[in-house]
Image (cartoon, rainbow, N blue to C red; front, side, top):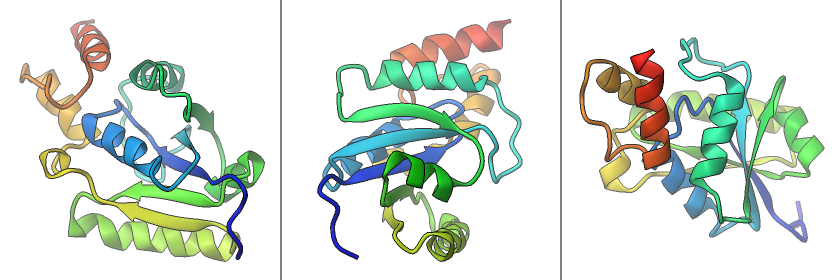
Length: 166
């Protein structure tokens, strides 16, 4: 496979809500991609209960990356490989926090490669300070009244607290 003229990377996930760890991975993906599309999945491969609706997640992510013209936010349904073709993406970026993430992510990467041989997966690890953060953990701690202000951007924190307050 030859390198495309412009490298478009997809960073897929549920992002419910987007965390500092997600932000770190998306920004560092710009080191290898000309453009990163944060792809918010309507249907997750994990069984998770969502707090934010898809449109809310997209809006939050857009606010987090406001001013970064090379990061776009889109929602998608169906197979990631189909969305990648539609967007002209040849790279999928995934974050690995722990060894336990690797087995699942490897299976997904291999399936995606079988379905679209032109689609490569790049695994990135977050900065150490973000390595334990997950959206579900942030939701749980915030719901129990814990301070999650260092784990999410101020805009996300405000919406998270407002959502939990209702």
